[in-house]
Length: 164
Image (cartoon, rainbow, N blue to C red; front, side):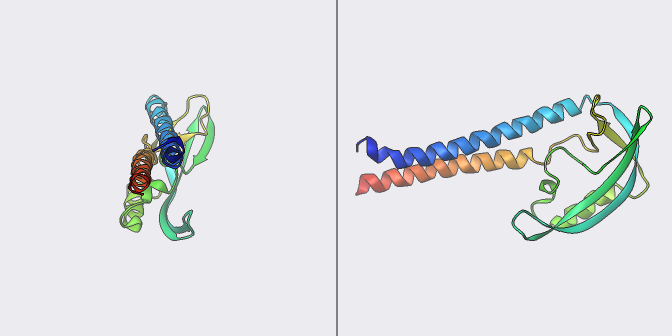
């Protein structure tokens, strides 16, 4: 086997490895946000909207999403937000039975209920109700899958080259 035979496996492994690294870095960024969010001040808020809605996902398929809108006041100014967690809005509803997951989320935030709103200390319009990341788990899983697929793909190409 000579150097040109290693180009394709190298490209496969390198590409998958690069994607994996990017996904892991994005997950780390989410973890850093969560760590910072745990130190954010908390304001009392009120749930203004709490419902489950049907939306199209990135692939054009229908999915379910909780719509929870809340208001809160910081230094005399009123803010409205609908972000429940850090990360993508739909990611937390992926998996088995997204409608049930969305219903469970909405049930935690009944209309008119009081909630603790974690807001950024210098940018109070940035807030979440749950200090966690909806996306980091999926980014790590995706990164591992890409890395494994790259290793497997490179190995298959190498085996085929050696056999021929």
